[in-house]
Image: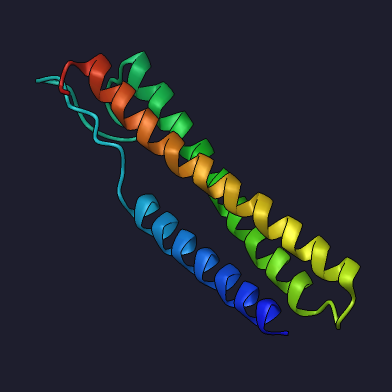
Length: 125
């Protein structure tokens, strides 16, 4: 009984930390240096290089994937909490939570890799 309670607390804490870190990373945008004389903006504003367009598309894709991963964390937590003592339901919820947290970790690392590669290609490491 005590181990089950500790595992529930551990799952909650890990989920909470990953959710907070993902929210922090989505608020910080990948910094792309501007070429002098070039207008800034998203897809339609000003002239952009191919690299900038690709970074914008990848950033949008990672944000969508992160949103879906958070939805899966919520869904897995819901399945786990509403299992009603069923071992199969609890295991299914834990599996969904585990996979969603792994997905969030991959997405967060992808943001870091995207920023490093983008800045390296721009020559501003």
